[in-house]
Image (cartoon, rainbow, N blue to C red; front, side, top):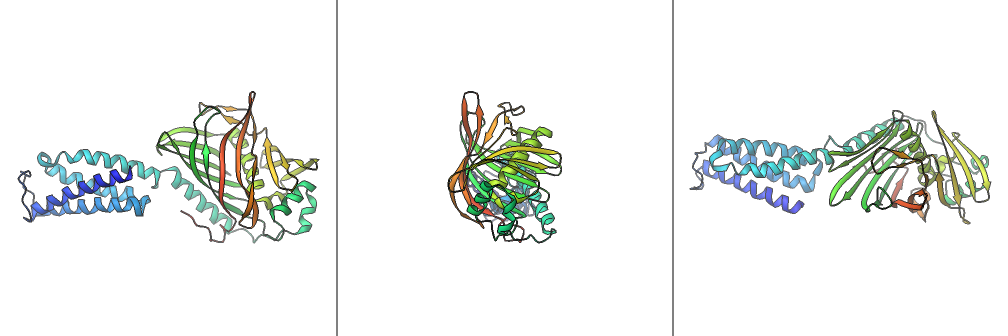
Amino acid sequence: MHLVFSMLLTLHAAMHVLGFAEAFNLMSFEQLRTPISRPMGMLWLAAAVLLLSAVAALYAAPRWFWLVGAFGLAASQTAIIAAWSDAGFGTIVNTVLLAAVIYAAFAWGPFGLRAEYERLVQRGLAQTMTGTHPQDITEADLAVLPPPVQRYLRFAGVVGTQRARGFRARLTGRIRGAATAPWMPFQAEQHNFYDPPRRYFWMEATRGGLPVEGLHVYDESGASMRIRLVSLVPVVDLGGPDMMRAETVTVFNDMCLFAPGRLLDPSIRWREIDARSVEATYTNGTHTIHAVLLFDDSGALADFWSDDRPALAEDGRTMLPQRWSTPIGDYRAMGPYRLATRGEGRYALPGGEYAYIEIEVHEVSTEIVSGKGNHR
């Protein structure tokens, strides 16, 4: 699609060069019956340059394509109107360009979910930079935890590391809205910050060949989930206390999976169930959630489940009470820890469990606060 659009725009720019050539008597075209003045000829040339610059921006700097394309569109259409009887057909191409500019302004420019995610991340980084320097985790710190959690933190390698003030993760996988819905491939990035807990998660998926964007926000202002088709059409827009409670479970799950050193947080109360499982009660402000963590023989976290994170119904509005679990595995070194690199999100229906998301973890970094992170 990019290639076809680029070729169309390049051809459109070449036609504008002909208007410049006609104005300066460099070439003569019988098809152009309306005289073109030299000042208008310069406008035709400027439009050509801007259109070609938009093609270059589409590949080299896509977040600026919308702006360059908008200037090119304005110059092109002004020139076309001045020579309407000869060049009016060019409006068809400009209509296509207008649609591309609007889409790009929301998909890559300053008006969409991606841009909002990046602004939230930068604000989170600025707030976290003002915090005190974190202390290193010692073996003595683990003594307050149940034995299964202690084993997991040793397995993950948290002893000797700093208490993370946040992390960045990059993920890929596939997701679906229901047990019978088709899978959608996705790529995602998230930033979590602590003291206080904040989570910003951005996802880009593909459904039926069309892009789908999603943004989860969790911070002091509340929790929300928004999903848009082609960056413009709202599909899901949820918030409120139920969403805040559900996302509090997700925030705690992220601690367990991506920032295990945060399990020393005093906002977590533990109850040992047996040698390989514990119950956790996590409180953030007025929201308290419960979860059960299951460990394997090596000490690694193998599964996590909670009844406090309902599923989103197919109507995109209703939250349905269902058990949520995240079986994980394939541990390897990632950042300062040893973490799971594959996992699922599952819901338990009366007829049995089903996975609604499958994830592969490509990067987890806790160095975001020092400025070593690579932000888009």
